[in-house]
Image 1 (cartoon, helix red, strand yellow):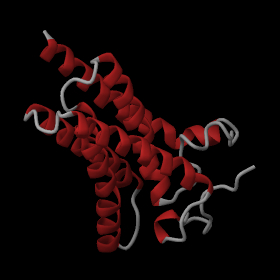
Image 2 (spheres, rainbow, N blue to C red):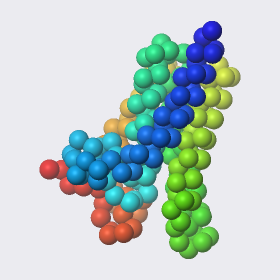
Image 3 (cartoon, rainbow, N blue to C red):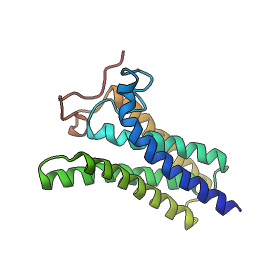
Amino acid sequence: MAEKRWRTWETVGLLVVLAAGNLLHFVYDWTGQSPIAAPLAAVNESTWEHMKLFITPWVLWSLVECIALRGHGALLPARGLGLLTGLAAIPALFYTYQGILGRGIMWVDVLIFQLAVLLAFWVSWSVQARRVLDGPVWQILGGVTLLAVWGLAIWWTYAPPQLPLFVDPTDGSRGIPLR
């Protein structure tokens, strides 16, 4: 029964992260550029802000699932590894295809996000299925990884590093200033 419950949570989580990530692309503008939406949703068209669309639902769902399933084995470390994998996949795939074609294509960008989410869940599922990394130290490291990346995503909304990853290609802006 526990295995079936875990699989149900994982399947629902996959669908929630895909849907929420796609919707978060528009939430900042839909809310009239609300300061409440800014740390959670994309505030511009930079590659980083598109990565943030993955971070927010991934971390929130991971924490909800961890509470609901009472930690379920290696959930937190698996989710930490999945998060890092998905985050690496987005710019790698995005810059590779744009380097080859010399331009961006919106449906390819959406597909890259979805592929990154699927890859992240596959990594997470693989780690959990193998029942590795379920010790308490790994749980702590997984939780710290999730919260640290989410914290950086929020911080870099207002104070992004001086790197091309954070530059909006449509207007050259980076993040939004603290109000």
